[in-house]
Length: 422
Image: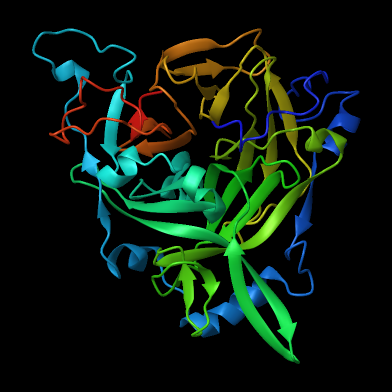
């Protein structure tokens, strides 16, 4: 979490919304529920005459059509991540791990390629898997990053990761962009610009990727169609170039925004869209949105989804809201099958984060285990019949291990992607 890009909750003094029982608003809460609304938007606010769909279709004809997620990893050379295989329980001396060095209850982990492992210009934030998308065992992970320092004007990107429990993962970065159309001299021209958002938590449903945006003025959910990724000419700059080619800051691929759900209504506008996860524990799948709050209680809201084939929300009105009493600095939240909520709670750059659990209506939550320093988003999945919680670290590791399979006892377990037992 970076306070220069992630908006700290406005209206902090406002009373938190009370937990709703059984997913329905309690008497007297109807007005609050009504205020938790989203406003649909199908075009850029500054170029509304051309819808996102129309602009994407125009770009598709110029860029030779879309490529699949699989092609992203095979059409151009993919980056290689390093699978971590040395676990605390394997130590010969029988000592337990230090919380500031590695998380507890580790199942799987990998570290990025060296350049991304130490890069301070990009910070990973959100994570989702194809288990969210369709309920199948994870083989593809998506991770969001936001640009800062020298990369701030590039906006945000996602990493498409090919994962399995036995081998080293491979991945490829894809730049998020906002497509638009304009009319020049009587003709339509299509282009794209950077996605001006803080790419926080992400959730994958069907073929749609939801990205939580917590920046002032744009707070809400941005939607991207994963069937409409485009290959561009690798080169500097962004968008259409003088020779007619399209560049994306030296990236090979772009993913254009296809829709948006903007915060609407007084309560929603006071609510920070810090994270989003896929909730498959109820009759209808839903997006669970949670917020980062340095004090008070983390608030959560749920928006139900429509069919998996469309991937969009079934309603712009929230079906449920709650305040997790006393839970602060929440960087990710998921709901497990037993009705328990799990939170990734961070503690700055020096102390390890915590995996915490909370049940609706409980006076307080409890610590389950330690996570890494700088823990971020959470995503729930099942692997070989057992539950797993995926998370990741945002802070760049200043030290590169000579042995990538080593957890590196000399540096904090920070910028890793990993799964733990809930």
